[in-house]
Each structure stands twice: as C-alpha cells, then as structure tokens.
Image 1: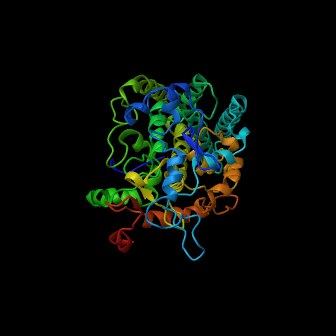
Image 2 (image 1 turned 180 degrees about the vertical axis):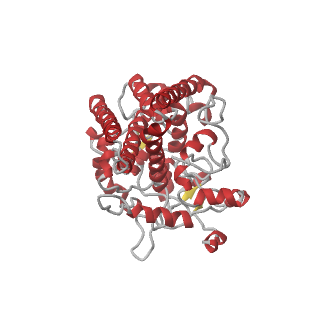
Image 3 (image 1 turned 90 degrees about the vertical axis):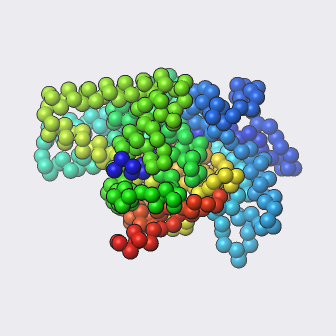
Length: 441
C-alpha cells in the first residue's frame, strides 16, 4: 500500500500582455524580480517567501502564449475560434492569455481582508468545538454518525483555510499566514510547511504529466510495473479516498521523499527550518492527542477525533481528485513544450457541492483558484463569473448539485474505472483505461 498514489490544490502577475495593437506592454513586477538576471528554474522558485508560497517556476509570458496560439505553424485555427463544423479541442493553445483573464476580474476580488479571514477561522473553530461538546454530552449511537459526518466536514473546512494561508490569500501578512496555517493544519495532523511546499509544486506544474504533484497520471510503463495489489488499492474505492496520510509519508509512485523529512527532494536545503518547524508542530499535536486519549479513553477519542479525521481525509482526496479528473470529455495532460502554466490550469475543473459550497469555503471554484490562487476564497465565485466570457469553451461548467453532492460519487466511480494511465510518449496525452482491469470488473 506504500506505493499507492495519493494527492492534492500561485500568485501570478503575467509577465507581459498585448495591447490592442499587438505590441507588448510590460506589466509591473516586484522589484526583486524585475532587477534580477534570469536564473535557472530550480534556483528561482525558492528565492523568497512570496515565490515559495505561490509563484510558478517559470511562467510563459502572455505574449508568448498568444503568439504560439495564433502562429502554431500547422495551418489550423485556434480551438475557440474554430468553425462550427469543427469539434472543440481542449488540448489546443487558447486564443487568450493570463492578462486578459486577469483584466476581466474586478479589482476588489484581489483584496485580502485579514479580519474577514479571521472571522471564518473563528466561526469554524467554534463550530468544531460546539459539535464535539454536544456529541460528548449526548453520547448516543443515534447521534455519533451525524457528528462524524458533520465534524469530518468541518475538519475539511479548517484545512481549506490553512490552505489559503499557504497561498498567501488569507492575508498579506506573512507571519499571520504562517501562525494561523500552522495552528489549523497541525490540529488535523497536516505538516503545514511540508504540505505547503509540495502543494506549491502542484500549482506550478498543474497538468504536467511528470512534474505535477497531485493525482498526476501514471505513464503506461510505470503503471504496468505496479503489482496487482497496488493497482487495486489505487483504483478501487474506497482505498484511494484514504490515501492522504500515506502520501504525506511516502508521496507517490515515481516520486520519493516525505513531507516530514527536510532532505526530501521536494524541498531545498534552505527550507529545512520550515519543514522542521512544521514537523515539530505535528508532533506536538500527536502529543496532545495522546494525552487526551489517556485522560478520556481510547474509545471516546476514536469517536470524537479519529473517525472525523478519516472523514476529513476522504473529503480531501475526493475533492482534489475530482478537480482534475472525471469530466464527461477527456482532459488533456501535457509534456515538454506543449505545457504552459495557462494550458495546465485550464485542465482543472470546477465542481458544485450544493450546501457544502459555503461550508468548505467555495474550494469547488477551482479553475480561477488554480490560475490566480492569491484571490481570497470569498471572491472566487464572483471572479469566476467575470472570467467566463474570456475562458469560453475552455471553462467546463460544473453540473449543478442537489443539496448534498451525491451525484459526484458516480463521477468518481466512473473515473476510477477508466482513468488509469497515459501514453509514455506524446506531448498532449489523455487518460486511457486498462482493458484487463475493466474485464475483471
């Protein structure tokens, strides 16, 4: 089971934009970036906190992307501008750039309000404590299942707020982001900096077959090398929905390291202190839980914390997987020169979770979050609506949910049965299914 692939979820200022006349307009960039000479990608990513939180390793300029989309050299039209008789090709370069998407989003959507963010933290913490107190007082087997579902969902909500701290969308204060992020994530046994850094890797490389970090596809050769038990655990429910804790310790097939080990190849040497700080916070929470178990008894802690934690893990794996899989149309994955930050981001999916949308802070509004994760969660819905006219067919409208998103269980099941691997070759590839696995079903 240690080889099970596990998951997911960048502040962008486009480098250049096009004027109406076609000439390039330089956009302002931070002084430490504007004045610096071009550096290798591996060194540039981690130069300072802001970059480590959210910036892509290398962002192809909007001018370059627009140029590649209109001058591909093969004589075909852009996907969004194709004739009605032609099928839309989601893997083709889009006829717009990041600057055009950004310009469509109202300015106030970029404003981070730390008081509002802290208000969400206070609300969620009070709900978590209130649920635990009420369930412990009633202590009825009629109540416990309801408590587990509700509290597991609230743990997931706490994770999303800590996730916003990691992106810097919680506030503009780096220390506030770090303190709140450590408290929230440690409380649900997530190493804040260790996960934040690997999640940054995911955002910087979303949609890239080899470099993505979250539920990325397995090349066919790697898939074929897995034993039958590993394949079973990866693609048979509910096992993949319990993958996150294992991912924290061993990552995924083809990737080595641990989120607790500063020498892991997902971290740079100058991030050792960050990783050790988060690991110490995680261990402190383990100590707290051990003390509570001794004081209250294992059964009470199982009911109050362990089972809600398992529900939280299911939410995390469920949501992150469906943000990158399971659309009725195949989603492209990229390699080499075909990949760009914009094209990779456009392979992500929005999902509707009904009443859960506001409980877990609109994390289902995922496309704009991937392209511009510095936007606070409370502005994501408005930003998405504003960007839709620019995105056109590249935006995949989510299926509307009933009050509870049970429809997504069917989507998850179908994807697990069909999205097994991608070709070992090719720069634009799509998931394929294993005939032997399907026949065995």
